[in-house]
Image 1 (cartoon, one colour):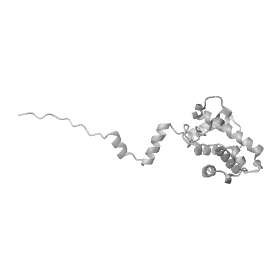
Image 2 (tube, helix red, strand yellow; image 1 turned 30 degrees about the vertical axis):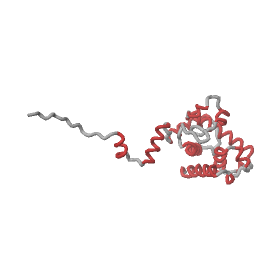
Image 3 (tube, one colour; image 1 turned 90 degrees about the vertical axis):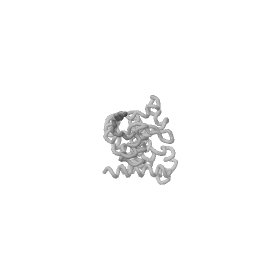
Image 4 (tube, one colour; image 1 turned 135 degrees about the vertical axis):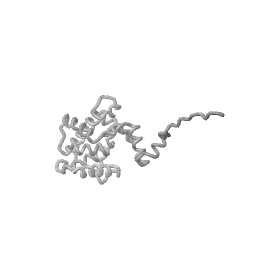
Length: 193
């Protein structure tokens, strides 16, 4: 008679791929977005953006209409709070700065545009410079409401001063992308109070 070999059974363990398919509580789109976010870096939370902007607003004197809420809405629209965002035009970082805008204010490498502190500080300086240009050149700019000034700045930030000025400072004459950009920022601001 042969003695049967003793077999020790281990509890069955699902493989990682199986677990993620079965037990993941996110939809396929949510999983893809999460994987993408993890692959390109961590998005900043609203609290982190608040803290970052608190530092920058202490360094710069900005008019009331370039408020922290306005800049947060602009950052959210530009990069979705992703400090490593790169646009199809090559704009980088939280405030999506192009090389020309970066080097107007910075001497450091354009790779530094991915640094949230440098990017936000440079972006705010750029926004302030655009505001100064509008004060000097936009007809009756100072008579506009704060909301209208924000909309003008959003359009200028998106399309550039030259193109906006060539279209007689008229948002309705801007490309659809720019009109949509201005509208989304306004919606974000209106929803915050």
